[in-house]
Figure 1 (spheres, one colour):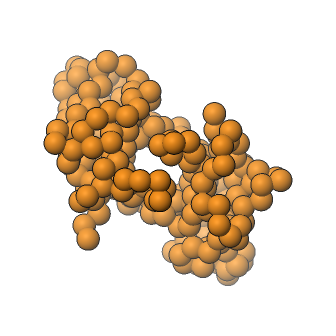
Figure 2 (cartoon, chains in turn yellow, orange):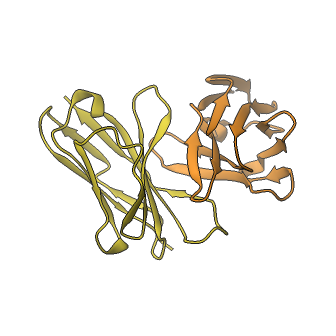
Figure 3 (cartoon, helix red, strand yellow):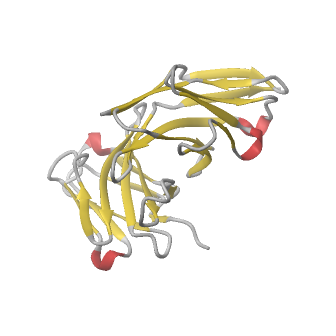
Length: 115
Length: 113
């Protein structure tokens, strides 16, 4: 079974540019989560999809961030325009539906550097 | 509301000696607790989890953790450290209907030969 995959693994962009991160969850997982770790800080929750619907987006920092999950499969996280403080590692995780499983499976992360 | 405190940002041990990584939590609900490990340039890997069954939880690579409700702790231990254990470890609490997750700040484990 393939794990959670993220693309790209690294991205370096200039301030003001746009970047789109992609996450492919484990097949069949209804729950998809985005997290971010800014340098030296803790990993913070950004948002949670259940299938294609946003269940919780309370962690999204501002309206420069837009997450989508078309068809309830893969998800994208767009940052437009990027600012210096957006630099960090963006993790995606997925988990099956239902209350039986509380474990989230994480991808390797995308390291974003804004210069 | 929930929170996690990892009491040590860095821990250094000699190879073959015991490992103790400390974690305290708070939660308004009955929590699930996890330890994840991240090796350099790798993703987060689940070491073990507590979900209201046995309070002593055994995980992969010889790690275990004990859930102590009275102390609100979930410390991670291993009897004998290996060089391959050098990594960053995260304590995580999850609770509520959709299992909202809160991470600790992480503990970097250094293993000295």
